[in-house]
Length: 195
Image (cartoon, rainbow, N blue to C red; front, top):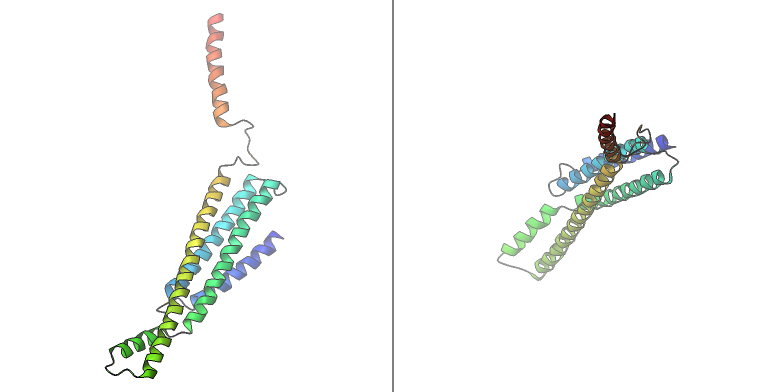
């Protein structure tokens, strides 16, 4: 089941990154498409690494294993959903000729004669520009949320990495073992003195 799910996830990620790559070179939105694709691929790599580490540290039937795995995967799926939202917003924005209406606004503003129609057009163009600005602001907000979430995944990976492995040979913590060893050393010195 895990392998089938991972293959499906790979396919979703690859398709989304491919769709975003079509926008990489666009002047006004290319940067956002690149950032989104980078967040997506980076997070996917982290989730795969997390799964490997988790498999090394815990048994798959442990309740903690399932909770850790489910939590990280749900966070990842939310990031994927957010990236889909961004991709859809970018699809809409790429259909808007931002440079045209910025140029046209400037033309109308510098025109010595402003007709009623031109003023109406100016109002309409400004509204469209504001819609674009709000969409960009929303995209930036989602990207920021994703980054904070990716940091949480990093913390989880580091935390899981510190757990004793399910295959650990030692049954006692290192500091306790060393403490016991030091006590035995001291006791052995006493033993030598008694003879």
